[in-house]
Length: 555
Image 1 (cartoon, rainbow, N blue to C red):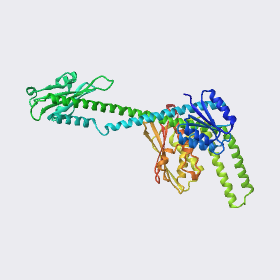
Image 2 (image 1 turned 135 degrees about the vertical axis):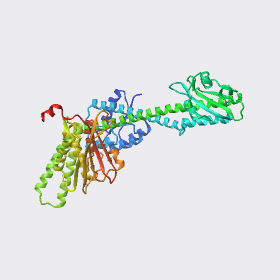
Image 3 (image 1 turned 120 degrees about the horizontal axis):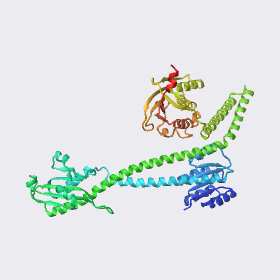
Image 4 (image 1 turned 90 degrees about the vertical axis):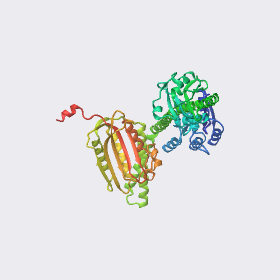
């Protein structure tokens, strides 16, 4: 079935153009002129994609996006507008928009975006269906929850002894590897017999019972087994639907309490029990197989979840990058004019009232912050080419510290270093890695407004989970600041998430730092609790030290 698209725009010409163009591509398109009607449509019908204008009377595109995601979280949304701003783009993508497109738009580019959004929507629905299947598997676990196979077999054997009024018995199961019968549970037998009994199929009473899949009743065998005067052996046969008969093992019962031999009636009763027992054992085995499949399914869901998260993050960044690249220069020019105007006012009005001076400084701070956001957006929209060089980790940190101390007043901050004596090298882009260290140190200082201590340690470690063949060097930066709330830790590396709203944080520092570290095949880890130390670890692969020519040139 063709994907269904709902188009919302208060301009009739735009609606007609998009309905005709999308319809020619085979999509089923419905159009409305306002947000309220769109919300009603979504509640009454199922759509795969929503294309909505941003500026509309009554309900704007952002509000439509927010409300529609509540009704149908799996619908994809593309916002089109002739009034682009960074704030609206960030807000739209944060709520869940697939893309943010500026008018006038290129029709081929829009069609490509529609195709990509529908591919993502299909991926999300498949993930949802897989999650539902997982829920069904979880329900199946309650059938034999908290019951081990040994406990199950013990209950079956005790029931068999109760039915036959016997003193001794055992349940033997076929070993999957050597196809021999082994005792899994017993009553009235020594541990030595339990541990050492191995019976081949077609050997002995139990072996022949298993081979022939038929009960064996021996009335009196005292001459061979001494105290044992009668033996009853019943096969355990799986009779699963649409599957061949499969021998699971046998139930062996001997020595009636009365001293008499077993009867045909007891054989029949035990055969009925064995039939039920075989079904239960087979179900248990199937359950174990299901458990393994559940584990595999969980791994698949985790991988899908990770892939979906990465896809969503990638699409968000790509959309934001396209938007940032398109309007960055248009934004930077007015920001430059505003900053120049503030400097002009400060020069021309040196003796104005303090309130006016404060207002000028506030405007200047806000403008500088906006400029930093645009600058950071451009960094990941158009990342510069890395210049990799081999560095000794201690030299890199000391260079970063000298730059940091020069730019930041540290009158209330004490910085202590604890470098390992081992000499090891990393291959990194010096400027990018200094940016990472600078961001982490800046966060540490801002977390200690009243002053505190920063400790920088280096050491080596093995990280087989992500660097299986190499050693790793760790740069650990610990501060004595206010710590981080538990619920905020998973969000720290999300773009535009910040815990420093009152201190003008942009929420891009840690995001870009992790991106840089991972581009260097490393990891960035954060451990913290509220009102306790915060530890940030930059983990990078170690490379060999100076080559022989370099060593020889120093002697």
